[in-house]
Length: 328
Ligand SMILES: NC(=O)c1ccc[n+]([C@@H]2O[C@H](COP(=O)([O-])OP(=O)(O)OC[C@H]3O[C@@H](n4cnc5c(N)ncnc54)[C@H](O)[C@@H]3O)[C@@H](O)[C@H]2O)c1
Image 1 (cartoon, rainbow, N blue to C red):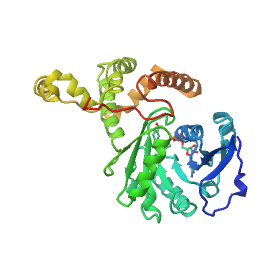
Image 2: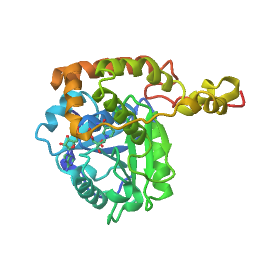
Image 3: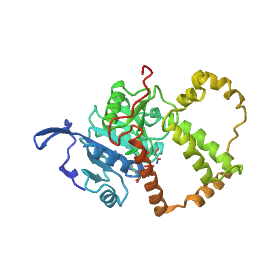
Image 4: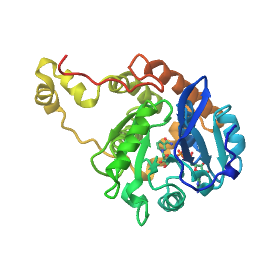
């Protein structure tokens, strides 16, 4: 862990991004990000911001914070503190990644509002909480926005940017600019909805997966293999609408809808919540639990993700992948 500014010496006065003249005559703007929460998502955000040249401050009340940061962010320009107000002072951007509990988010954002400049965006990583709820009664509601990553943020290109009714255009623009600067693909929603877009789609899909396992149609590993070998690979190359266009041949999605789609009329069913434990047992039996299983599975996922990012046009920490250009 290293820092040019000890946290104890930081004041609350507004300050512009620091200019670092040390790199062989190049002028480099070093901006400061405060990451709130050093869990799965916060640590990954910290790695991403640090690798893109930001000075990172991370705050979390967990007693093992310093050891965790030393282990997970070795050599990165990161300082750690349990004191959120102290970590927020002087930040140019805040990425909140604390627990997914409305009362905790509200409390954290109240502290952040009081200890940041009024031009600093407070972006929450929340997976599903409405920005209007987490910003309720907050004097900085105009600069609170959702910046929802997919796990792990350091590898997955998407960040969903979701404004609440009180969020200013300027805050949304700034969040989009920051995420682009990190090499991400920020997708800006027009308005808020619980679960946003990514997790609404994921919920429908995961509910159906649980239903199929509960009904004894397929087991956990076979379902995962089926998805990796079909929809997962497909959706990494074309989106569902684009895939519909291709599925219909030259007749496009209209042909697919009238032809194959018209015959797909069946009830999808829903998993029984009272039997949710059965699915969890089956998943644990298939993949294991605990530190060793997590490390093994995360390494496998990260290796595979890194292997496909470049060929698919998503350079790691580089420019965002290109869309199809209909004029070509
Ligand atoms: N895990 C995912 O797949 C995923 C994906 C996208 C977004 N998210 C969102 O990211 C956020 C973090 O999720 P996670 O999976 O990293 O959770 P996590 O449980 O791994 O980490 C949360 C961290 O917050 C810390 N914390 C508790 N109180 C705090 C406080 N007052 N101030 C600062 N830190 C505090 C905890 O000690 C913990 O280290 C959530 O809002 C979640 O919805 C999670």
